[in-house]
Image (cartoon, rainbow, N blue to C red; front, side, top):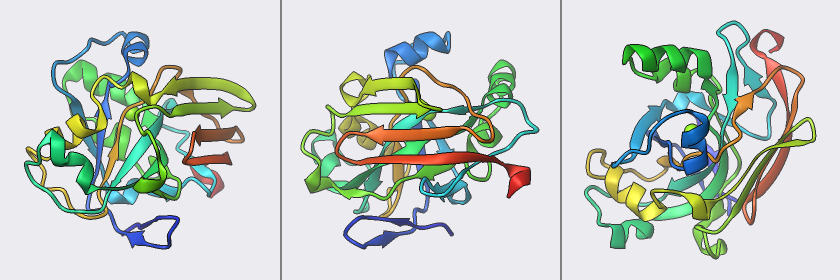
Amino acid sequence: MNRIKRTDGTVFTPSKILAVGLNYAEHIEEMRSRRTSEPVIFLKPNSALTSLREPVQIPTQYGSVHHEIELCVLLEKPGFQVSEEKAMDLVGGYGVALDLTLRDIQKKAKERGHPWAIAKGFKGACPVSEFVPAHQVKDVQNLQLTLTVNGQIRQSGNTAQMLFRIPELIAYVSRFFPLEAGDLLLTGTPSGVGPLFPNDTIKAEIESIAAIETKCLGWEDE
Ligand code: MG
């Protein structure tokens, strides 16, 4: 089981990683998709977790692997069927995540109406930073997200642009999933997603949370 760390030294083992797709309007446009009336939820397994401080491992034999920078919410209290009003009481911290996606495989799965499990859940598909305690982040719905690849800005957005905001997302997923301490919630990516290749240098930054530069390696280079 993979664990994550908070900057105060607390360690958590997520029982699940929940993620929302299509939560920024410009990303919906670039995916030629449509806005949904309810959040689009998928899961990544714990085995997809890895540290963003380590080189990002890119599978090279299954088509394109896209970067998606996302604000990651750490839940530190359990909850089931929580209201939006109480949702933020569950939150224990925030981190920077990459929702790595095997885009060609996902595209085929979408066309066929199949699940996204492989496209979103492969080994190393969820690099995360360390987590900052929630009380240290002043306004989580107004944070700049920036992802650069080889020094060029690819993604630039702000958490203010989320279509479903964090309390709505937590309340929504808790209708179906009992939330447990350590669970993670990826909150969607702004526009500018694109492919990563071995030897790329990426910098993932969310204001007030973390700015991490790392390299990409191919699976075979491990
Ligand atoms: Mg995503």
